[in-house]
Amino acid sequence: MQSEKDTKARLYSRYPLSNVLIYNGSTILHFLLGGIGIALGYSFSSWAGYTFSVLYLVFSFVEMYVVMPLTVCPNCLYYRAKDSLCVSGLNILSKKIAKKGDLKDFARRAEGLFCPNHLYLASLIIPILAMIPALIVNLSVALLLIFLAVVGLLLFRFFIIFPRIACLHCRAKYDCPQAGAMGVRNR
Ligand code: SF4
Image 1 (spheres, protein in one colour):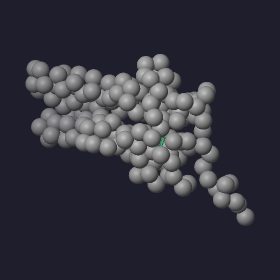
Image 2 (image 1 turned 30 degrees about the vertical axis):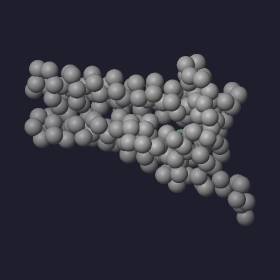
Image 3 (image 1 turned 60 degrees about the vertical axis):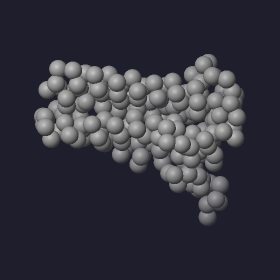
Image 4 (image 1 turned 90 degrees about the horizontal axis):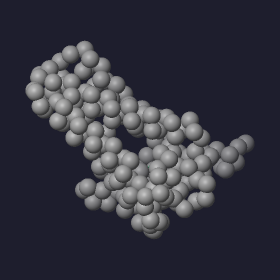
């Protein structure tokens, strides 16, 4: 009979490179396809498609690769654990650009309307919401395929990446509100 310890997921101080690549690869692909979809969907306007696309791309990349390492990562235990590598790899970047925060503040990432967690979710959902009206007024096979790909990436993130590749193995999962929401703390 397996002990409880054996049935619990392994926690990584250094995530395997494959997990880091899958996490960042799917994130960057999501943002890029979202930006392309917005540009294509509103291409009937001489300015709207490119303008909204660039605004979305700037928002999503800045939110993920600037706001997160400046505001969330300094309070995470991966920031201070020696030789650690979190699933996003952002603890390495954060150590270079931000001062160490306080572990007690880590859960604050989910507090407030414009908290980092909500901005992160917005960066994933905005292109989907933006493409729905575009599909109605400017339907094309390319736009439909991009829309389905972005929806697929969102589902992949929620049903595979968070519960199997990222949060399940995270040493911060006992303090992280997202891990709590994903129900992986006791797995
Ligand atoms: S539990 Fe998930 S969201 Fe929270 S710090 Fe770990 S990997 Fe990131």
